[in-house]
Length: 113
Image 1 (cartoon, one colour):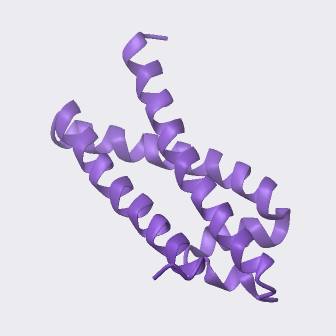
Image 2: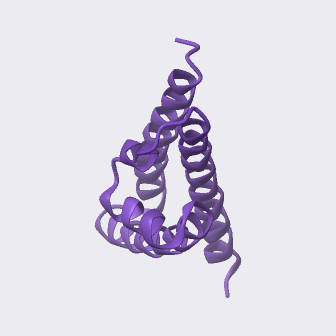
């Protein structure tokens, strides 16, 4: 497998892992605060389904694999419509917003704001 594809997959795994870790952290904080319906905080319907069926850890891992596949397909589609760097920047912007939102929600769940 070419080095470019391997480095893109590694980058996607890092972004997805950060997203899933922040999501698990957010939901764990809500669970520790005694909220019986802590999974209701998850806005992604597909992720919520995985969490309900497989639990928080395994649901995150399995949904992370699904996300890796869909992110790779999105990158390929964007790359064919634009170029490598534009597609990568679009993905960075989207994941930046996702990670920023998860971080904001975590700070809010810890009642720091």
